[in-house]
Image 1 (cartoon, rainbow, N blue to C red):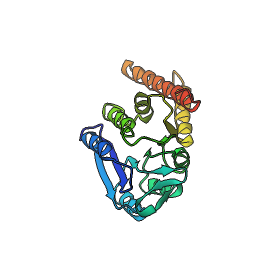
Image 2 (cartoon, one colour; image 1 turned 30 degrees about the horizontal axis):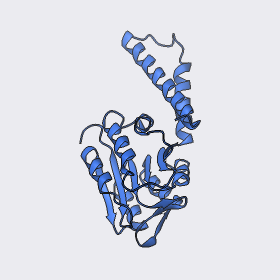
Image 3 (cartoon, rainbow, N blue to C red; image 1 turned 120 degrees about the horizontal axis):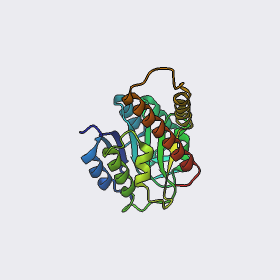
Image 4 (tube, rainbow, N blue to C red; image 1 turned 135 degrees about the vertical axis):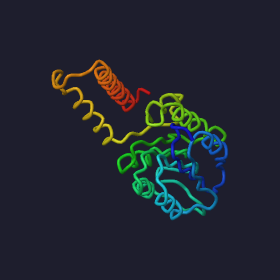
Length: 219
C-alpha cells in the first residue's frame, strides 16, 4: 500500500438485494481493507472495531433513518454506530445504504469527523460509483482531505451528502484565527518560512470557504 492508502473496514452483511462485490474489489486495489461479511451481528462490528484501528467504517447494506440492517434482521442503531466509531477514534463513516442522512448527522455529533450518506433509495447496480470515485481521489493525493475528495467525486445530483463534525469546523476556525493573529514582526522569517505560512493561511481560508458553501447547500 502506498502513502495514500486508507484503513477501511467494509461491513457487508448477507442481506438480500445488496451486492457489495464491485465496491470491495475497487477498494482492495487502492487501500488497506478489512472485510466483515457473511453473517454479521452487532457484536461482530464492535469486536472488529476494538481489535483494529480504522480511518473509515464503510457500510454496504440496507439502511434507514434508524440505522443499518445486519444479518438475521438485526439493527445496528445510530448510537451503536457512533459507539463503534468512538472505540478507536475512527474519523470517517461511509454509508452506502438508502436513506441514511439521519444516521450520518448523528454520527458527526457523536464522534465522527465526517460521514457520507445517501439521501435517496439507491439502485444496487450503481451504488458503488460514488464510493469508487471518493476512495480513488483519496488514493490520489486526498487521503487526509475528505472534503476535496468528496467534491471531486460527487456528481451533484443530490443522491449523497457529506456531513461534517461541528467540532472539527470550530477547530479549523480557531487554527485559522490563531495563524492570522500572529504579529508580522513576532519572529524573523526566512523566505521559505514566509512562503510556508502564506500557503498554510491560503489553504485554511480555502477550506473554510469550501465548508461554508458546502454547509449552505451550494455543492
